[in-house]
Image (tube, rainbow, N blue to C red):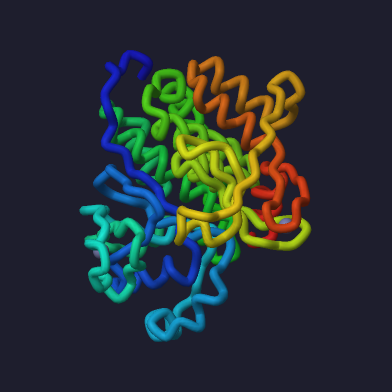
Length: 317
Ligand SMILES: [Zn+2]
Ligand SMILES: [Zn+2]
């Protein structure tokens, strides 16, 4: 396994979308996703339903009609879709689609499928263990991790982990092999998350990679409950409140305060050390922000980013 040549994997990317918008996509009615920035990547996307719910959206008649009679799952991978294009409408033109926001970048989605992932764990483990194709094995590890992470949810299909102890042990060995040889940041982040999932580490397994890859975490302020985005990446290192997703301009931001690696402990210290050992300096740097502190731009309360991501996770599972 360790002799794989370095190849660029065709990776399944993830995108986190709040309910009820996720379900609007899964019905097939909504094929445009609004984003504040251009996204050059094309291919398959895992549609991950965020933990918090955009409650005001229920008053939108288009939304209300589309989700009628549907259960709105949160904090889980609910489907896949193919991202085929990203465009902006011409200035002053009418939006290209009823779901499109003026001024936003419009991701065009096709081949939208709702998933029942819980049922596919044994098949994936077999494929990982027997396959010699890095790309396929990586995708299978990614999906198996997501399945195990989802298996303890209230709507999950029983205790997948207990039923598949041997497969999970194989997956853990294999994921560690791949971690040591992963070159791509996204690939590495997903493998790290899968590792936590196979180990049974709760509260981080669904969120770590989504945040590292999308370069943002979605949390609520522990004091005023405002919906906040913690941005860690190319756009900077700051926290900002909920309307950030719709308007990139004129939002208030406050800088994050990274942890000093020497002072980190627990899961944060362990992840930071693994990531440094594997040679991913940029991910290690991101970890110091994930396990550092943020300030709410609305009420100026300071809080631990990691604590807030995991407490939001606990509150919805
Ligand atoms: Zn458009
Ligand atoms: Zn606040």
